[in-house]
Image (cartoon, rainbow, N blue to C red; front, side, top):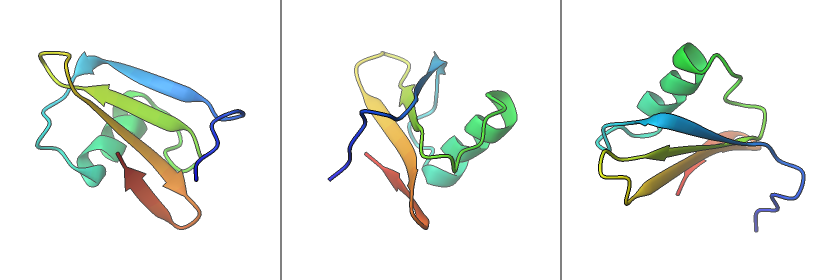
Length: 66
């Protein structure tokens, strides 16, 4: 179970290629958003048509993606 009551949520405003997986999306967080990808925040990405989302976050020792 994931509790988001005290977590930050960041929305990446540009669209991303949805073939990108965890490694590619975390590189966007680090290089373009200039944020720490492992601080427990949720990072939300959307596709070009803006009808699908991918959420990446760090949980204990591993990245998770919804």
